[in-house]
Amino acid sequence: MGIGEIILISLVKILLIISLLFLTVSYLTYFERKISAWVQNRIGPNRVGWKGLLQPFADVFKLMLKEDIVPEKADRIIHLLAPMIALFVAFSTFAVIPFGPEVHLFGYDIPLVVADVNMGVLFVLALTSLSVYGLTLAGWSSGSKYSLLGGIRSSAQMISYEISMGFSIGGVLLLSESLRPIAIVESQSGWMWNAIVQPIGFITFLVSAFAETNRLPFDLPEAEPELVGGFHTEYSSMKFAAFFLSEYANMIIASGLIVTLYLGGWQIPYIDLLGLPSGLVALLQVGAFIFKLVAILFFFLWVRWSLPRFRYDQLMNLGWKVMFPLSLINIIWVALLIMIFGL
Amino acid sequence: MEQKSVKRRKKDLSFLERIYIPEILKGLSLTFKNMIRPKFTIEYPEERFIPSAAYRGRPVLIEENNGDERCVACGLCSRVCPALAIEVQAAETEREQERYPEKFEINMLRCIFCGFCEEVCPEEAIVMSKDYDLTFSNREEAIYGKDKLLVPVNQLQDRIDFLRKYK
Image (cartoon, rainbow over all chains, first blue to last red; front, side, top):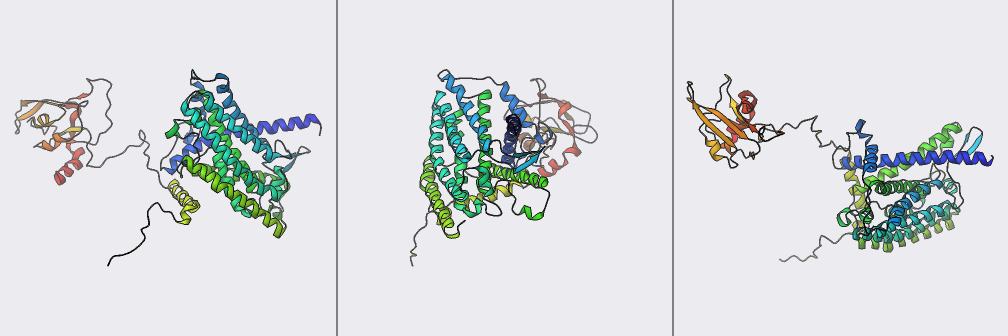
């Protein structure tokens, strides 16, 4: 494969991923509203298009037509930069998440991941840490007390939960002996899913993922009744939309990470025993990845409409006194498994 | 005999409750059950809510089957109306009941749907109907005259039955 072909294939994959991400994000907002309605025995948006399916586009148009207001006391440059950071981080993280096995197409072997880097997990951790900057700078540059409080909360929360997240990933890395996402997926062949082998790590990672994406029950940076809108109080128009999009894109990335690290990625257990043609298997496996991703996304929405918000001290208690020790216990558990069974 | 027991306060959680996860699963199962339950929403302009006989909608005058009004223009309704919404002007007729309202107007901007007029009426001539979405574009339109108020008696039968049973 020449350099031109590599660039072409990468570009096609990037375009595919970005457009799919945008589509998923917009329909995620639709399903967020639909599921909230169903939980409360309502119908939900049903006016724009068939069953309200064009609602996300109506929302985007509305936001684009809104006036872009910047407060007088805001730091204009940082105020503009913050939503860009949030959006950039949210969309670039997906580059390392594999959504299917290697496929043979037009005579090329194409791995179904944008960038097959050997330190992919580290890349994800680094970028999700960067996303704190988006929220904190947004809160700080707005020149409003509510925004500032939201920004401070978000930085405290995300940094605390980053630790338990990192340590839960430690267990996964011990088993896979690699930071490469594809290797991690392949190490979970059959039913050796990390969610089954190390349930404690799965739970700590899941909870940390909720905290990292600022979803209820950990949506303290936004906390509408306390902080008006949190870090994005002073944002309007497309800048607000950027935060909105990045929140939902972060959810998709968190789900993609959970699927990759704990639910066996694109693998379907024992599918090679059925003796299907390899093209069909690849297609089924991409389908399996999407199915798992959607299931986790549904779980995200479902939890949001079931649980109340944590109080700030409860959040910190849970992060430092419960999740952190639990993730350490998980590492010991995995180490014992390796020692005894030599996995 | 005095019973001795350690009182368990409501805020003391058991171990299972303190590790959250079973309680979270309980909450999740509850919301999931609600997700698949039938919806309460009525899609209003397309689908309309039909109230029961106990509903107090727009007050109307009863029109007998032969086309005459039942009202004898005694003026009690206009007297009892707390919002001063009703105006009645009586006149004589050749019919057996001798009196009829020459003019009967209810200002629907003033009406508070209390139902006092219906309660006080000795002839069962003014009753509350089931109409509930009244719209007008100016103040003149909001004053309903006899043309809008008279409703055939057979359309109001269930309200009359309700009044006879409970009033």
